[in-house]
Image 1 (tube, helix red, strand yellow):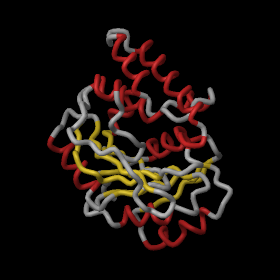
Image 2 (cartoon, helix red, strand yellow; image 1 turned 120 degrees about the vertical axis):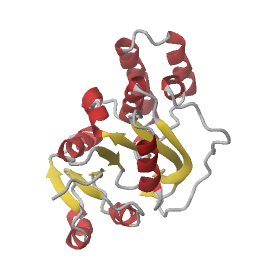
Image 3 (cartoon, rainbow, N blue to C red; image 1 turned 30 degrees about the vertical axis):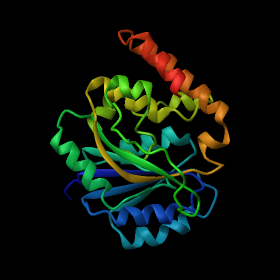
Image 4 (tube, one colour; image 1 turned 90 degrees about the horizontal axis):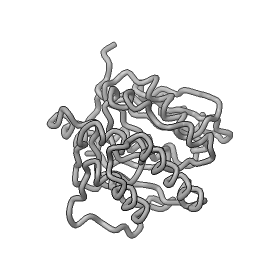
Amino acid sequence: MNAPRVSVVVPCYNAAWSIGRTLKSLQAQRFTDFEVLIINDGSRDQLHDAIAPFLAADTRMRLIDQANCGLAGARNRGIAEARAPLVAPIDSDDLWHPDFLAATVAALDAAPDAPFAYAYSLRMDVDDRLLPTMEHRVAPRHDLFGLISFNSVGSGSAAVYRADALAKVGGYDEALGARGLQGAEDWKVVVQLAAQSMPVLVPRYLVGYRFVVTGMSQSNPARQLDAILAVIDDLKRDMPRVPRRWFADARTVM
């Protein structure tokens, strides 16, 4: 069997209520050369029942069960299982526009040195209704400085990564979760990758980011802030040549 071009990684924890809508958005993609790795991270709901019809109907989809180890660990499991040179994480309650994979893969094809491509996100509620979002009137800086000072990637479902680039940075930092600092793993990865080479931006709104009170950043903003500050400290240690004022900008904006 030939390897697909993209491995879509869907980490799931108690996501029976939303996973069907997410998987339907994958099936609606104009770009079809992908596999879907659904990582069941120790769910205690009816996730298997919700996923079963998709597994039966679509051979591109595969379910992987594991004990709960958190979002970063679930994503890393998907990356380890991926067969494609490109990896596209999407959270189990988010949605992609049908053009998302086509646009981001084309952007990477046109920029062979870019470690990832990303598109803009719009917030939505539990019923898929769009929420007010501050839209970009001018494309934000998305070089290393831009992504340190302001994370325009914005969500964990907005980017397609080169698998080899992810391997170089060790994937998502599971140690943050072990320290009780979940919530900034996505930002840490995009900054680490931007330090390798400049990513490419697709200036279109192609991602629906679920904004719910039980979400990681909404349910515990203090922990989210602690996670951001911890990542800043990690990056300052690991990137001694980066001007300190860049991280001061990050503290202010975040």
